[in-house]
Image (tube, rainbow, N blue to C red; front, top):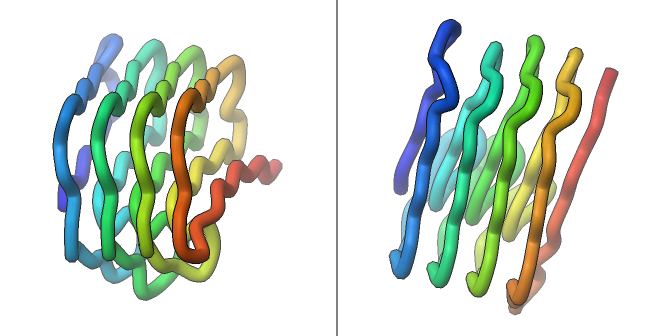
Length: 129
């Protein structure tokens, strides 16, 4: 899988993933296919287009296929997931996709278009203050 960490002070970080396959990956906490930790960040972009997530898992928590975590604070970030498929990705919550907005996460945008989920896939978007 892929893990991305945005650090404090990064200005407008971006991740663009297109026409990729994430298969048979696992993570001990979250984001078996892709995990993005965007703590203390602002103005970033995460775009995933035309990609497939199959048979990935997160044994500890959330986002078997894809996990994005915004927190402490995280503001003005944009996530777009388009024309992707999530097939048999497993986790306690958000087997397919899990997006968290926690602790002062404000003005963040999530766009999901033409995405398919199969075999126990769910989309979980959480906000905890």
